[in-house]
Length: 190
Image (cartoon, rainbow, N blue to C red; front, side, top):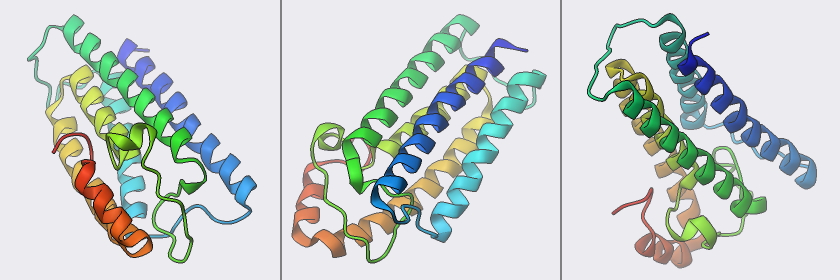
């Protein structure tokens, strides 16, 4: 097995593991659905699986299609691992600090607290930011234009989910949410 494949598989085991653990624990705690059935979320989740599958395939086969070598291999690995470390830290912080307000997609009618502390002081959507970090990490690690293009598509899908969520949160939290939006960037930088 190629080293990049192993890195991606271990990362996915950890990244998806904390996601599923959060969902299972919160579902049991609340005793109600925490997954909304929105077309945006469903499409994005399917796309994430495709992105991850293509990444594993490219890593395992060593396919050169779309390959580019802008960085020496050691630098690509170092930057890729640093981005994956940031991905895990941001994902874990966002899952923990959102607490019982965590949802997958919008669930109309469920009221959740507006979380503005912790990592949410710096990003309104840190969990989505963690996916963008993952897209970047795999693209750099494998130095592949296909993944760069897929990462761009992933960003568009994430943006669609975020816009739907922001619209819902604005109706739920009104001026408090609009003020939060003025103070804190959507992802990381304004």
